[in-house]
Length: 231
Image (cartoon, rainbow, N blue to C red):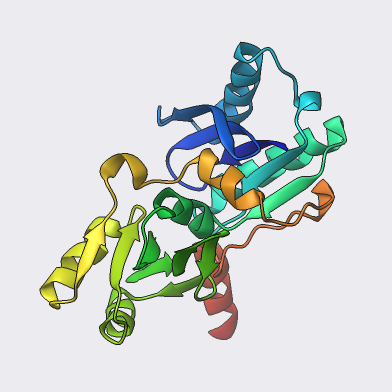
């Protein structure tokens, strides 16, 4: 199955194409431009260089969160429009699960994606490598680094960190004396390849049913609720 994948959940954006799990091509860009200007243009250029069109793929996948609220909205909207126009099924995958595939060849460790969620928290989930690819150990969540470290103290396996929150958490793990490893820099951030890998076992749906998973309210929504509660 050929999967066209998109990730725009952080500062960088990427698109990738896989064929039965094999990476055919990936474009990754952190140019400072908004994803609304770069994401579809990258996909169009990539497919053109592969002498392919969207009609040649079997499904279109996208990271639906957690991550940048604006970036996720752009990615989901782009895939909805692209899938609908090409009459292709869509697949929304967890940003954290997609990142975990970067470390799916590491055995006997807890694969631990951590994204900086600010407000003293990280977006996190935990996985283990298995014969099928990944085994999920907990749901996606927003958690403090201290809570995560307390969980790690009760586990026998080493935590292997990946994500833009890995540096912060790595230092805190070390300070707490908890065994930890960190992904190499070139594997640390989100990628559309990871989205494609996660989509291989994901649910294919009609594009209009794709829904972002922000995990928590945006700052604007929190401020609005605070104002309402203070009235």
